[in-house]
Image 1: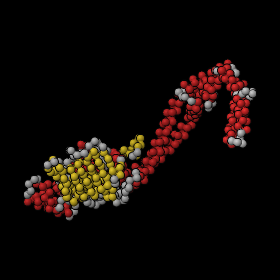
Image 2: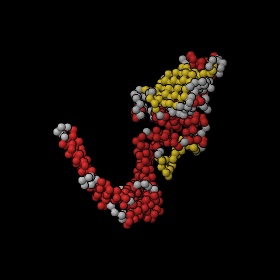
Image 3: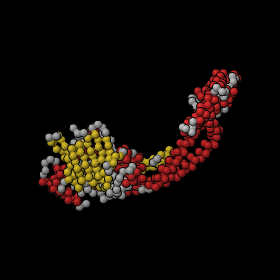
Image 4: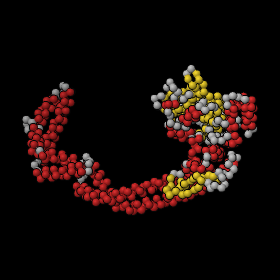
Length: 556
């Protein structure tokens, strides 16, 4: 339940702190006093869109904060998934809206997303306004109501699992068919390209090797001369560098007994002499292998030209990418050749998935029809007390050709207020007052089945009065045995039935108009209800009637 509400700088509310109680609470006040403002603030705690226009004039930000008792409501798991600390007793939700347009959401002082807030708030609070009465004409609401009364979440879960498997298998089959059709059209072209690449017989790293070889072949004489020159300069004749290095080494070794460092230098010179000899031999060997070969040069140039052409044609830059293209094309052709067999297997998978889906849908439909029979009888029985003794109610089931996440049921809610008139779509035939009463009874039925700690009715009594208003109030009293019920009302008959009574009023001050809400004690309630009966001028008769209504309400 909603145990406390804090609002600051929201619309006409500068600061409001309200402690709320269990049972049936009513909120009254003159039109324009600020009841809708409180509803708007509560809507923010449900995750509704934030509007900077709601910030009180002259202020930088507004805050709406609610504390909810959550024991047994299953919100702890939702919060723990998002690493938000919580216990099973209470949670606090806060929305902050700044004048810059930035909105922040906190759950237990941890930043949270609006999506998480919306998911959590579904377990905490249900605000029923006149606008919600339109839901009776919406199939999704009707189906959700049936599922709630059916109370078989495992059946719905099984259906949705089967639907997901079927949907994925059908999507995969569709993609495979599309790909096969497209590939079939491209088969000849792919085969031609693959043949070109296979003729090329490109090997990993071949291009780099050929480019290096091309440089040598194109400058063969220049390279050979340079290698020979280097070899000669490093040769082994008496005047060569290695010979002089040997002499230098011997000179240093001769003084090693007097200067120990000379031995190390001699060893380093010997290492250099050996390395130079190796280089001289290698240069000679390389020079022997270099010779002008016009035929080989022509081959390398042609081979590289073919490789460059293929790289450009396939829009790649490396040998590796071109070889990967070849592998991919080979796989494409294999898939095309085996497409019929693969598609046949996937068709069988999709058929089996559809059979499982059909079975799950049938079970779900049966449960919904059982729930529909219960709701039809409950509506008939309860609405007799609300001035609809001849009401007829029926859920009409037809089967959709294409399943969706809700099932294969197309459902309409049919209604007639008279025995002689066949039931028709309730959204097209029922009056506003009739729809309000039907929705109220539906909420009562749902409240018995579903754990919903707080239900707020916003002027659900519009279009009714007198005895009928009192009976609607009694229904809300009954709902309050299962949930905290808060009703915003203009009718004294309903206001008198509340266990708790709050009054919204406006006050003019130095800073402008401000809305306030206060709890009423019994004398204040009598006066407020009397005003609702007679208007601004209180009369003894109105006060007496208020007393009667109030005491009668307490006896319910």
